[in-house]
Length: 368
Ligand code: UD1
Image (cartoon, rainbow, N blue to C red):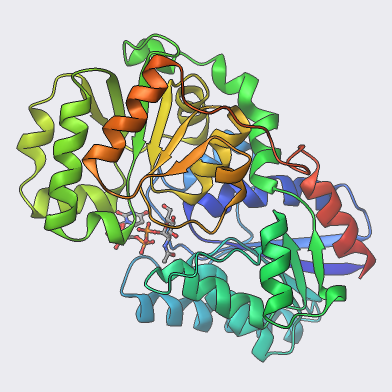
């Protein structure tokens, strides 16, 4: 029997591991251990995702919590090393670690396992923004360099990995597991009463998410962004589920009063997976700096104005519904006008974003 350990730490990880775990559970020759690092710990960033997506509870919780990058990374490494060594000492050695995405937990867990000579598979390998000021870009590069199974969601990732010298036999274009989850859950999500609870009509509102350090950590950037959202909300109802990092910055920079002055800008707590998908799947437009949401909006065919100057997911712009608009108010207003007048581009769902990526991953894992 093969023994895999899957690691998840932060909100987007849970969406990615759900279908992989389900696919692995169908293989009787495979045993999987689920390790939650505790990078995200709030009910609405963690537990609710397990409940919404029917993920079984973690077998092991490291409970690392928040901290500086070095502290959080180090604590995940120490915890992972302990778990992997104990598993071997107890006669249940882990044959392979599976990590997903690009958060600190992803990279830290991969490093700990690789140093114990446990091979590591990376789901969502090869994505590159070519912007090393992003903590996620550092995590992506470091993770890929020590993984021998690189499971890729879009063709640009394959090109990036080849250019970095990875051999063809380590690279597998499998598609997008986040879209597996979306396609499984979207009908169930739409049946919820999320819109009624927020007094919204389908296809007549925008959904906002902002949490990247580059957008929210400096008052001179976040202040003007808030001004734009307030202004745009005079034309369109906006719903803004606020990530704790962003909420802390809004408070610290004294921006809450400005946000509160716009009656059509509804600021709410972060939502669980199903409520959020209910909102995004019926939105007129999504304005975001999230990586995952660029992909989800492409799969849903909803316009996505991405408040970044680069993306590690270029297919969402070339084939999908996303446009990079930076942080400028002028750009946001211009593209919003296109959306409201019906002249914004339409997109297609990329090849292999078909709901079967996790099945392909389970087959590759099972055969190695
Ligand atoms: C992390 C990921 C980011 C991902 C995002 C999804 C890294 C480097 N960043 O960013 O790639 O897009 O998750 O949400 O791994 N906090 C809480 N409750 C929690 C967790 C965090 O209040 O359950 C607060 C803490 O103040 C913490 C801050 O949010 O310091 C940032 O959390 P952290 O996990 O370090 O990064 P995110 O901004 O969530």
